[in-house]
Image (tube, rainbow, N blue to C red; front, side):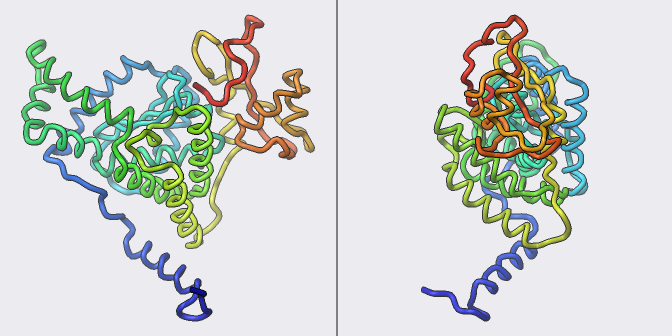
Length: 352
């Protein structure tokens, strides 16, 4: 069928989609219900936060931590009053991941920070996790897993009592961490994608950057069969997520409302010295200020002494090898390990 101009044409369809988006600023909740109160959810999150930090450790970089927290709080300003007191913490593991606990406890790994290339992408990822928290996906999953039993299990696990309640907490935390680390399921991930795009857009970020990130994760998925929790087997196909995200971001951008921020150079400047990969490899990201006309090949030759590593420069920065840098562009590269060795395998395609 061919489209005609006028009321039945593409312009009308776009108008209808934008109108629908404006008419329904909060998408329908994906699924489920919970019998856990928000106060109980806060308490479960508080206890689980201690376990997350004990299990994985916090990445000790005060300036970078403050930067991530500031982006998270900027996103929350566009949401309005919330029931939870949100926090945003970097955990010290190389895997590319981000996660949300009940009660607004949000985490991002240093591996994820190393893979992202713009502040808008960081906003998209944090917005996705905020979406999980505001939609109360963890509480809904716990209700689904335990039914009414979660009330007694949760309260007993969180109340004083030492060993007699340790088994109850073990049951709750195991179910919780399974979903936190692997994701919340197809419908929940799509809902969080949607909420994350809207949240980033309301905060003034370009939502199309989240699409760029999802495409990069698709490449990573194909090359390594590993990645962000949203790409596990129980989740929507990556291609499906990309298509839906492209559609939503296009609709959001069509609304107008001023310039949208990407902030690639500002973001990369915060990554200088970030630990990359396994701790024992002792390798760190460094940032190079490009000269006008530089390319990944010239940076690889001048900084790393090996033009063949142009692909690594391109991959780290989410660009093509044919890219020509502008004066002052911030370029990520992997510094050789201090001991002069290779720091583990040299040919890494991502930070894990």
